[in-house]
Image (cartoon, rainbow, N blue to C red; front, side, top):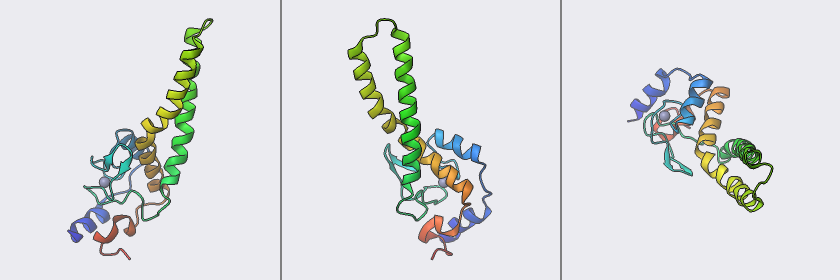
Length: 144
Ligand SMILES: [Zn+2]
């Protein structure tokens, strides 16, 4: 098993950012493109079942990058959808509908986009800091 993980890690070429983002949009591992990196909508597996990549890359605060991207994109998209709803119902919008839709969008969009933004940040991070031995955890013989 250790040799298999090490062979996969050393033989795999770096992934282009566009490829990593495209894989993140499909909720797949940005490194190898396989399924199973998400165990739950809001939870990533400890490691990719295919390539062994640890999504947190050995850093306890790695989720913060995905969180920041999530907050920015999800709230911007929520605001855009709210404005579109407002303009679609103008000149007589239902203000009760506008209030409830704003609440649903502001709370729902970050939850809906969480796995995508978390994996997108992992793709960006893998592009900025190429894969290193520690990314594959204790299955990697070079892991310290
Ligand atoms: Zn993988």
